Image (cartoon, rainbow, N blue to C red):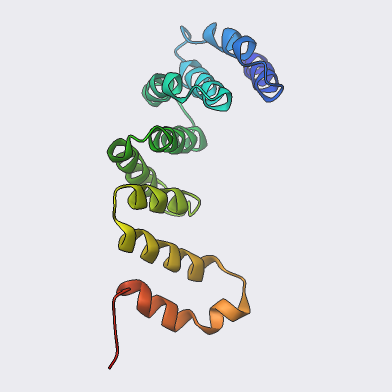
Amino acid sequence: MDSIIRNAIALRKEGKYSQSRELLEGLVPDELYQGQAHLHIAWSYDNEGKEQLAISHYQQALLGKLTSIERFDTLFGLASTFRSLGQYKKALYYFEQTMSEYPDSVEVQPFYAMCLYNLGEHKRATSLLLELLVSTTSSEAIKEYQRAILLYAKDLDQKWS
C-alpha cells in the first residue's frame, strides 16, 4: 500500500494528476489508508488548480487515520484552499484549528494573516506579521528595533505627543 502512495506522489509531481488520483482511489475503501489517500487526492486537485474538488477530500481525510504530520497538512491544506477560493470565514476556522493543534508551526501564521486581511482585519493581520518577523528573524538590524516593533505591534495607531 505504501508503494501505491509513493507511486501516486511521483505521478502527481510529474503532473499526471488523473493517474495519481486513480491509484489513490483504490485505497479509499481501505480504512487504514483512506485518510492518506484522500489527503493525496486533495493535493492532486490543488496542484492541478481544481481547488473546489480538493475540499471534500481534505474533509474526508480528517475523518480517516492520519499521522500528526498528515493531520497538520490536511488542516493547513483545507484552510489554504478555502482562502484561495475566497471562503474566508471557513478558512479562518481551519487556520485557527491548525494553530490551536500545532502552536509551534509558525508557517501557518502568514497565511492566517492573509486571511485576516481578506476579512478586513488589517490591524490584526499587520500586528501578527510584525510579531512573527521579530520572533523569526536572524537580521541584526531588525533585532536592534525589536522593542519598538513589538510596541507598535500591540497598537499600530499609538502616537506619542
